[in-house]
Image 1 (tube, rainbow, N blue to C red):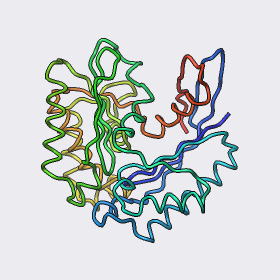
Image 2 (image 1 turned 90 degrees about the vertical axis):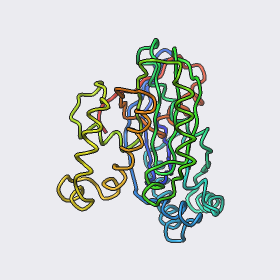
Image 3 (image 1 turned 45 degrees about the vertical axis):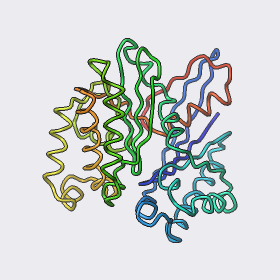
Image 4 (image 1 turned 120 degrees about the vertical axis):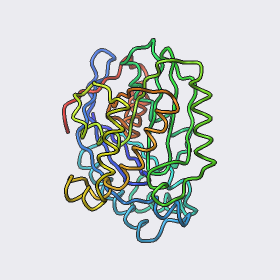
Length: 304
């Protein structure tokens, strides 16, 4: 059985196709195929509040390709959502209609709270120490989602209009940063020894560059050293010398700044990087929808 998840983000759009195996009301899944297209809708949405015809056409073509891939893979069910860029674009709903008519994909534009809920639907914290307090930090192109867990329970979560594309376009505001700081300080003031959980493409890349083994936490000091190292190179050299993709080489700097700032405010000394994101949460929601009696969901971690 195969399911698919589509994430239309501010920097890139992604399609994840996953294979399911059900044994005694327990579901395990393996990521079969992951396709990423760097359309960068945020540049239009955050500056002009409108997605240009060129990028809208690129998005519709990508969705048509995703539809064809899902048909070829014989995907049984799928879900598709769009986040910060499409939320802010005045023509977001028109593009949703185009995608439905031309690509035959039903797309939901989710608000920030819903986005945070989807991200932690993979429940990675259940595989960690339930006695500890964890701060989920997911940094995207247009927004940052933060969730606090204590004793295995969600305490609170929120979404803030601070993201990598937004920062590169100088569309982040001091007021929003202050709101984020207040949220972090208020939620964490009664807890000690908070652990971080970092998700998103940039922290995944930073963890890979760090050379740490899977399952080992990335320390604040190591992340700061990585940031200083990457920031010592020009954008051109991060691409040509370090070998970063063009659409990763610029956003990885503001992403590092966001993670480091939140870790400092929350007093976090180390952060786990489970390599999950919005599409992983969407797959979990699909499983819960199609297997209402399932008692356990796990991921088989073979590489794509």
